Image 1 (cartoon, one colour):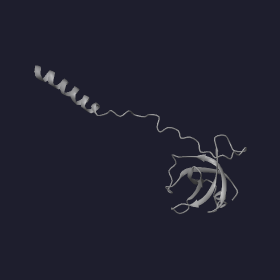
Image 2 (cartoon, rainbow, N blue to C red):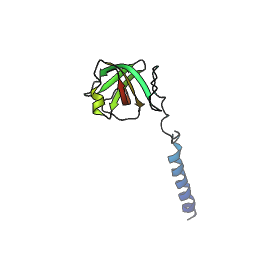
Image 3 (spheres, rainbow, N blue to C red):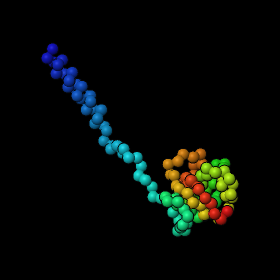
Image 4 (cartoon, one colour):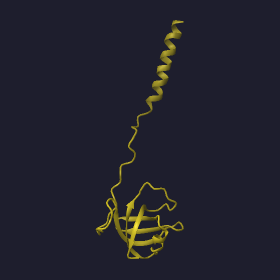
Length: 123
């Protein structure tokens, strides 16, 4: 009886300790760090606070209906909420777009950093 009273608590303690022993990776409760905003050298005075301006050439993505803007910082996936606004952008055109980068956005295009376009100039 004395052995049972001693062995059971010790076995339980060992089992609990073993489960915690492999957990050496710290948990990041805050998620990924916030990326730096995407900006270009051309500032647009009428751009809303928190938005960015990009100027570059529109190219077709490898997936259907995917438009990319190539500039000096890389490829940006142009995402439009307004289909009429999207219709003004043609592949090969040099355009300036105003909007916000959304690197966490899920898309089917699989290319470039998603950029939510609010206005387009130069198309």
